[in-house]
Image (cartoon, rainbow, N blue to C red; front, side, top):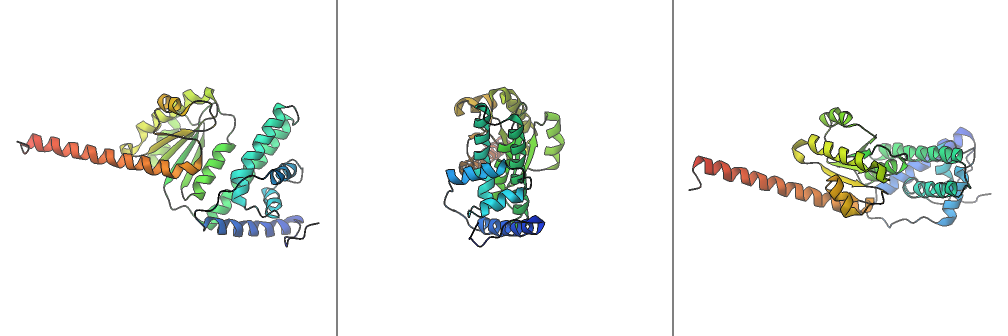
Length: 277
């Protein structure tokens, strides 16, 4: 029995009520900047995983509702507890404590939670900031991390578009019809490195005037300096909190490069005209 002012979710009416509360909570969250960093509490995580594995938790609203009863907002559920739950499930599968079917079903539920929070976010605060393209390298089997990354970007004010295992030919029309300020290539295993290299090379060729910043990152067990050298990206990004500073630095370097090239062209034109004598 709960005594926290939040009714039990009974039927669609209860879920609708919780959806409205989730929207209100997320609306308050995204209106506040520089909030304290949230941490995953073990008791909340254990409860989240328990509900996640129940048959009734087929609707993302059920999972969000359960966490709202514990005063945990939807964005925190999607960005912190969903990845943490995925790690718990993976560890359980490795120890033969969780079946592959359970892991698959629960992972799809986690994807549903992230998608639902993304939908709520788009309703309460449309993106007005820079645009980002999130690419999952070929050979990757898990895309939850990329989905969470895109949501975190939107929470930070970016607009974000995600593509899974795109071929270089798929990027040509996408880049021609859209302008992206930032591209992030996500890779979690060394098998995906070759694909990441190809994606970065293609992005560099298709970037208009070379203005787009290209980041690579993820759980791949490769040192940052090696990953940067192998892929030819501008930055290696391991966590979203560092993104804003890294993006600002990258944009600053891009602007300096443009000014430098513009100045060099002016000098060359002056010399050709004989003004430099």
